[in-house]
Structures are given as structure tokens and as C-alpha cells.
Image 1 (tube, rainbow, N blue to C red):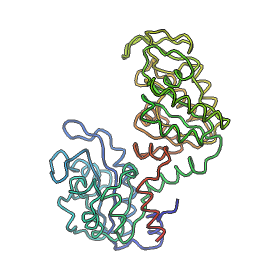
Image 2 (cartoon, helix red, strand yellow; image 1 turned 120 degrees about the vertical axis):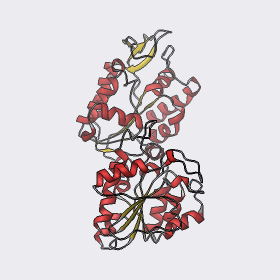
Image 3 (cartoon, rainbow, N blue to C red; image 1 turned 135 degrees about the horizontal axis):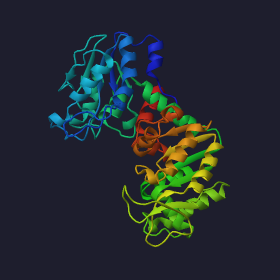
Image 4 (tube, rainbow, N blue to C red; image 1 turned 180 degrees about the vertical axis):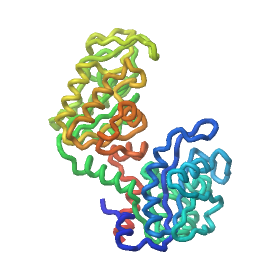
Length: 397
């Protein structure tokens, strides 16, 4: 994927004295008092900001936060907590500006944070007038927010259309490189792990991957639907019986290519969904009418771990069971360990996946951890993300 990179501009000496507008993803979780509870996205934004400042640019940064109503600024929508945390990480003051679309005063070597961009009228609909106003603020637009790359909004797409120069920041560039390595030119065998509660939410992803991967591992409620598709009983487990034909079609697609969707041979069941539920390991043919399947069994986990051990590339989205409860975490823990120890290049994304990675402390053992939720899923579906599209167009001239 050919896009202009911010690092290229810096190496070419084209950044000093320029007004640089960085679209970051600073949409961090907060508690009821507005305190930031997890700051990964802020920390991930720092390298791009430091690059720009070190190169002598006049730096503006903005992001969305939460779900504000356009045209109605409220205190709870403010980036003020983000500004405070960013100041701590950078070791410098980070002024926060409101009502910034008509002009921003910032000198080379200085940094300002621009208030929640989704408060601006026309942001989500990519209003051209708003996009042109944003573009007029800068000499260089830097998209460094992969989490928003699947949205064509004024601060992510429109500004890239009209800015003098539009490029990818280091975070976005790293996502492009990892995605290309994992999906466009993967080392084989390519193994994809897709898990979650519903087939319907990931049906297009499953179909897209079934046309390309060598092994498609399914887990969670998705695996239950695939078990139904091969004639297994799943008791009262979460599943989508109306999508059994779709699951069967995916199995057939894989078979036609000499690939496979491994179906669980054993599972972990309980009679209730709770933190104190008693876990029972049974074969896949022994699930009783009142059973709830809440994890894959140890034999299945071992079989899947063996597939991962032989992989050249692993794409991971979703835990295998209810890993939040330790008695139903065995499948996810085994696969996480297998991915961590595998020599394969691995890319992981999605909120539950990142939570599992953090729980088992394997962050440093994953080849690349994607910062985007919806964007990562759309990439797996084979879609061209708007951010990639416009940056490619601008790079092509």
C-alpha cells in the first residue's frame, strides 16, 4: 500500500516551521467522575507528537472522545482529562483550545490540543465546508488514528482531501505494514482465529477469510453455531440456528480449497452462566439438553495449539470462551500461550482479544497488536478503509 509517511517528510526536511495537524485517537475510557481508566491510546499517540515537535513543527492535535452531540459542547465531552495526561507523558504544558475551526495560533516547537472534533457541526457527515476549514489550518495533515480509519469524517477523510499534504503517522503506518504482512503477503500456513458471541456480526469476515486462509479457527458462540452445522447437540448454549446453513457453506468453502474449520471435539459446560458456576469437561457428543457451552475443552485446545505451532501467520480476533471466569478460561489461555510461543508472525485486534492478551501478559510476544476495533474487523472483511483510500489517492498525486 503506497502512502506518504510522516517519517518520510521529516527525513526530507519538509516539516520544520510547518503547521502540522495530527488526527489522533484519544478516545479513552473514563469513569463516572471523568477520570481516565486506561490510557493506552494516549500513550500510543505520543511518538507522532514528539516526532513533529522535534522536527520543529507547529503542532495541533485533535481527537473525538465519547459520543457528543454536534454543535453542543458539554463539559463531559471535553478533552481536558486527555490534555492533563498528555502533559504528564510529554513533560510539558498542553494548552486546550475550544472553537478552533476558524483559526489556531501556534508557533513552531509548540503544541496545542484542539477540543473534541465531534462537537463540530458536520464532522460525522464529512461536511466539505468544515473539512476545508480544517485543511486551511495546516500545511501537513497527519492521520495517526487507525481506530477511526474506517470512518469517512471531516477530521479523518475530508481534511486529507483538501490539506496541502496528507500523510500517515507512525501508528497508522505500522498498522498498514502489519495488515499487509498478515493478509496481503502472508507467510503460509495462514491461520485465522475468529471468535465471539454471534456468527451474524462476523459472517462477512468469516466468508472473506474462508477464501484465503489455510485454517479458520472459530470459538465462543460462533463455534456453537458451527457445531450445530455438523449435527452436534449444544444444549442451551448461545448460538444462531438460523445461520447454520451459512456456517455449513463456510465449512464447504474451506474443504473445497483443501483447508479446514476444526470443530470442537470436547467442550467445557455448566448449568448456569456465572462466576461461581461449576465447570464440567465433556466430549462434544455428550452435551446434555440443559448444558451451556462456555469454553472449548482441553483436547480441542491442544489440537488448535498444534495448528498454531505450525503456522506461518496468525490473525487473532476473539477469545475462545468466557475467559473472564477462570474456570472457562482454559481454551483462551492455551491458544494465547500457543500464539505467544509460535515463531509465526501474529496480529491481534478487538477489545476482548486485547483484554485476554493483557490478562495473560503476552503483549511482547504478539507480532502486532492493532489499536482499532471496528477498523480491524473491516480490514479482516477485506474492505478498503476510507483513510487508506484517501491517503493512497493523495500519494498518487
